[in-house]
Length: 134
Image 1 (cartoon, one colour):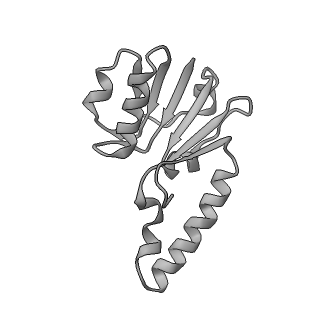
Image 2 (tube, rainbow, N blue to C red; image 1 turned 90 degrees about the horizontal axis):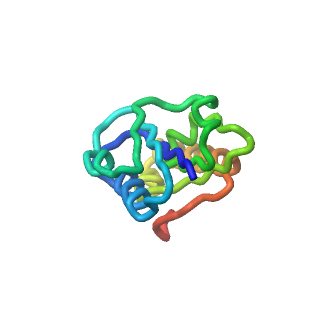
């Protein structure tokens, strides 16, 4: 199976580490990681992983069997072909960062983020939450 993994940035943190563990423990599958920037050496060492430093077009994604997004930014910009399932993983408490701060501005941003999440999550087949807060 060919799997496209989309993330906004490769850096030390939950998203790239989650991608690394998935690729490591599923060596029978081919993974292409699409990221705008960053570097995560542990991913480059895996034989079943290829890294593309760009955001994929619809034509790029036509060759994959599954699309897996990490974080909201890739999901926001995603134009996936209709016949390919899309799953998403929410990573950590930063997805609800405005809920834990007081003030009108943070309340407004929190409401906007929830509306955006509701829209984006309605476009995918499966949403994976890693913590109870998510």
